[in-house]
Image (cartoon, rainbow, N blue to C red; front, side):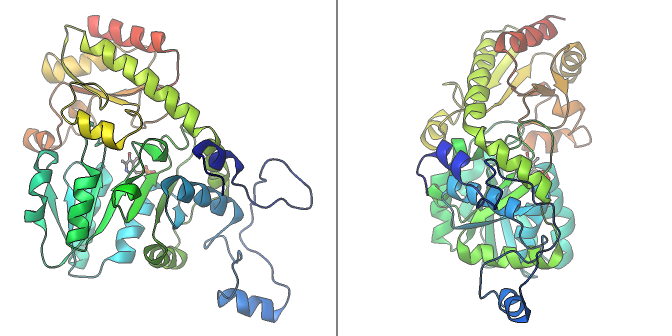
Length: 388
Ligand SMILES: *Cc1c(COP(=O)(O)O)cnc(C)c1O
């Protein structure tokens, strides 16, 4: 295996066919054929490693998985139709009725719904700690706790959790430590280095990077991935070969895209820091970020998400969105196109103010997923909307 990230991204490739193609072809096939009865028997008995049926594996999904496994420093992985199916399948495969989960309260909305609405159907309860309570984490661990779950940076408040400190607690209590690494990508941060057992991505975001396809992946130890693979193989949340083909190509440019996203985001953050209509800016690589030191220790770059608090609360936030001309109002993130959201009047509008504050959503909080347009145009659009 090639050592460097960019080389792995480009040169890890499915074996060439007899046509000597340069770029990996798209294997749109639901099943694969066998030579004879013995070939079929030994294949189903897993005596050889080969493709049987695309609900299990497919050359395109395997190429995509192999790249992420190498990038994250994992042993094995499995690709899913979406980020949420990766998350749900991981929990469903590893938990039994009566188990307990400890999670940071600041997690993706649908992940939170899974904890609160669906896992309790199987008598699995989740306790939450707030981002500023990470030092009290051990108080939330019970005898039946099995999984410790976090995202960092968090959405939408861009807080940073200390992977090393949390990984140490997980190890001490023999918990499976799972990190949703979606906001950072494996280019910026590899949680396994800090003690994570499993890493999950929504490939829909920066991995695709162009707002085209949905996808998800879980990677980690061979032992845990075996359980997750068998669950997926039997229950069917498979990634389509077409999406895997797109996503594997996307990984070839992940490093240069993420470099540029982060460079643009840093410039947007610096511009906002000097603006008089703004109360505060949160970006992991700004010195003013409350967890700046931790961010510097565990992240290569600051990411592409910038959050800021606009003066004037909810109405100022929605006025800002209405005044935006070029940037998109959309729920996605990690796209080439810059996207702005105002959680308290939109995605999190149905929560009570108290619930919003628990996840760091103040009334005037705006989240920007900084894209790859020329940064001068991004800043000009933000500036005119702030002045409108
Ligand atoms: C989008 C997202 C997910 C869910 O991914 P889908 O591909 O939309 O199912 C999970 N976690 C985080 C942090 C996300 O941003």
